[in-house]
Image (tube, rainbow over the protein chains, first blue to last red):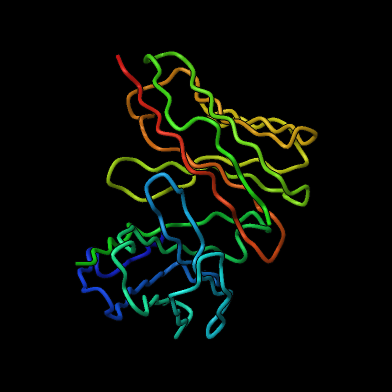
Length: 116
Length: 112
């Protein structure tokens, strides 16, 4: 089995601040994802990466940057935190493109962002 | 792009009864339809999926039905138990560029 570890679990920042969330997986999966989960809005894809150093924008990429430094890690940066950023950010990974190929997505426990 | 509508936002069922969650999708290119479960305070985990080459799949007490003509798929939780209480998300594969598109989730509560 494997695990996806997201850090930190809670991230408190000030409005306008640049904030970074990190994700590590030991499944040796090719593809990694960042989703944002808002109450009543489901999961929305921010960025995904199909291999090391690859980045693909999702529907919600504006206001975010991402970095896939190595196969096992994928980080997400909120470039200028806004009060409506308060949501849970979920990292996931899959063997390859989980959507089209039907490989299961494995999710981390989530990172809750609080902007004061 | 693909849009997935999850029709029930909440469901309350008596223990032992069945719960049914219905989803519809828009993109005829979608061929893979997984379901994920999120228990209170936890992250999502995969529970069952169906591909477009079949119209029914069962895994223990979970049944997924797919109606491609109507672009509709559903999750049936039979003989519900307290541990089935959670939020369930349906998803559709869309085309290659999009990846999975999720519904908004259905909160299922099983009461004694």
